[in-house]
Image (cartoon, rainbow, N blue to C red; front, side, top):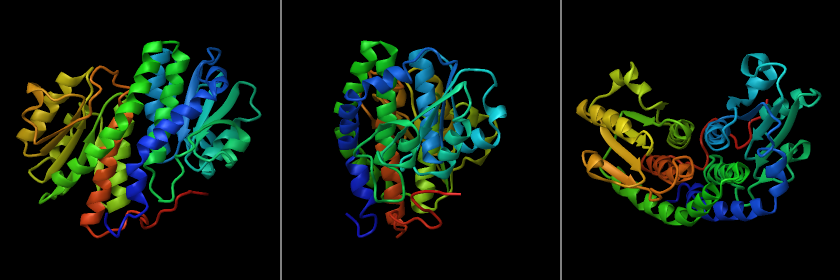
Length: 351
């Protein structure tokens, strides 16, 4: 391990332990599942967060819509306390779910407090710190091993995303989804180890001027998170888009110096791979993250197999995260930047 990133590297590499512990913790919080995400009385469930927490909130909301079949949205925390009526329709029964690693982010606290006296709003949350302000003002799921010393969110994000998705699976009443989440916990350790080696090999003798991450559905928020990880750790500018949306204008930036990473789903696989082929024809280096490689992925410059091809796309979400986290880490190391201490950033953002 490099002298740089002494906090970040072990936190990425231990996320499978945090995920397993989150699963175990969830078994003792079954009442939370039924009272909140399993409660059919809400007209809408609103997941909120800031930065990485907002991006995972998007994945949580997408999973809720698919697995529960009811309305769910994701917003930056500031939308709720500053411009609530533009984000959420009035006169509806709302469950507001605050997402925060530290449970101390000013914006998520202000958002929950702004609705606490409204009759049609209830609040809850998910965090890694059981004694945090968020946990004091709302009933929270807690990821016990999500706690981190590094500024950048890695295992905290993976474990909280997993934990909320597992709670949604339980709330759905579909045993198959619960079994899928158990399988994800079993697969994760091998994916983490494989991603570490894969990224080191991929980045040897490679550099790019454009870094782009593409995904749809639950993977769109994760593509934004991948983009943020690279910016935070290495100060490299990168962008994320919906996979097919990238073709509508943004693809003009693609050239031989471009790197494009695809979060490939199974549901939309054929369409996403068409986009990947097109980008490669424009000169981009294309990396596919996919459940299982096949003849249809042979064209790519690199393919990372996640496994779990029998799982739903939503359940597979956290298996995509180790690779993009290591990508940020090793890019920073190659640039002699310490990912433990990104400039201008703190672990908790307060107004």
